[in-house]
Length: 221
Image 1 (cartoon, helix red, strand yellow):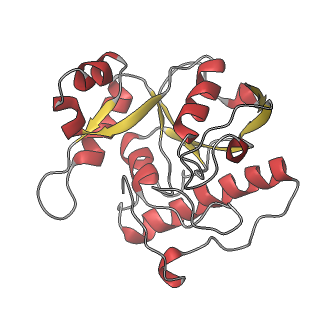
Image 2 (tube, helix red, strand yellow):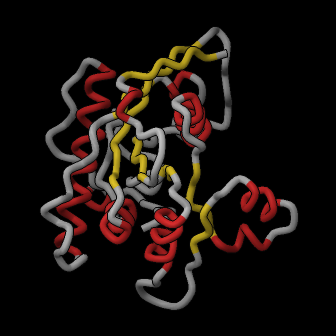
């Protein structure tokens, strides 16, 4: 099995709404981060496509476990992030959102350029966005792999950071410039936490798939 080690876990609020924004480099990451959050006394929630809630059995499980549906109807920017943000506040939930939107394309598994969904939700809901990083998950399930290996025993570490300071962005129009600035701060915070876990200095700039001819498939933006 795996040994889970949390660093600065006291920084995770025991109650109230917040967004946890971790790095993402393995398909098993949601399970790993859910395990860490559960161990710190909070029930992990994720955003899920609204269509999943209409599937028999699956929908009941998602609803019962408190997951948040996000509808993507119509063209252009929908009000899905706003509705999801309101649920976050009303239900005082702790929600995990991967700001990269998909597995990092960085060759060395550093966080890549982020998407705007997490910061948009934080600004629209007024809740904190807390960065987190984990390392060691790739020993259980490598990036792009379908093979899972728990033996020999693996050590997975997670470090929780302080809430990202977005105070100067609140009250400003939530436009592309504001979202880009906030997202850059979040990704820098995540990269610094990961650097601490790895004992390395993260790259000064985030990997940009669009500049490296790589396909990017986001889940929530």
